Length: 284
Image (cartoon, rainbow, N blue to C red; front, side, top):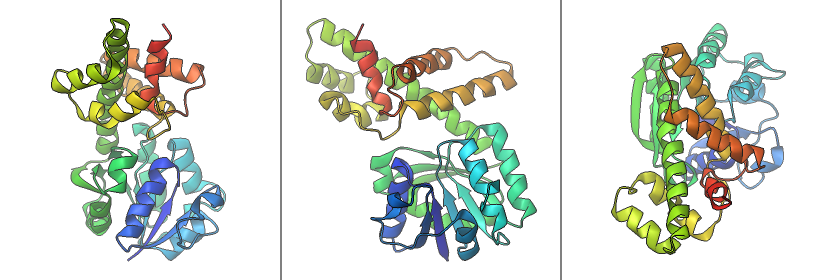
């Protein structure tokens, strides 16, 4: 089957490269065409042209507004030949918006799968993302051979919105862990404990986690080039607050964590990796 990919940001481009490395017959589209120059695959002129020429199409975009524009905007997917196609949206969306995406693409004869992924650039490059999926089982079966190329394990949650809600809930832990690790590291340094020693102790104790393992080198080198940006974390925690409101329950650690990443945005750190919150605590 022919495959398409839209959205060549840090994660999207890495996922596209992973598909290419597994010999997928891939065509891409990106708003900034130059980002596709080094991939060595065909570049479509528009989302409409791309969906007309492929069987399964992946999206990886910043937010739900960007997804809506690709689907229904000028020369968007809905203007192409959508009949019988599967659209796999790996964007972390607002849970309320994905219901619209299901309906819009169904109207044109396409099947929509929400499939947010857990992990960032490094696991994506190895095909080791954790993949969440909701949507029609027949569409899932068609997309599965490609999903297996970008990650394992794959959790098929079936009912629309569940995959998106689970991704937002997961990011509550990601953001809170990252903020706690950053603050604890600054406390250790203020006490005169070296950064390397403190991180090693965290790894041997209560701080041991996938988050620490993924961000330890960044914290050591203070290299905050983005794998998953503070702006994305802030956006996801804002969506989680809406989920909490709908469930009529408080969001305690998530709300505090969201405001920490809001401070990062206010200090023009939004494009940096989420581990850059270390710098916020360091300045106090």
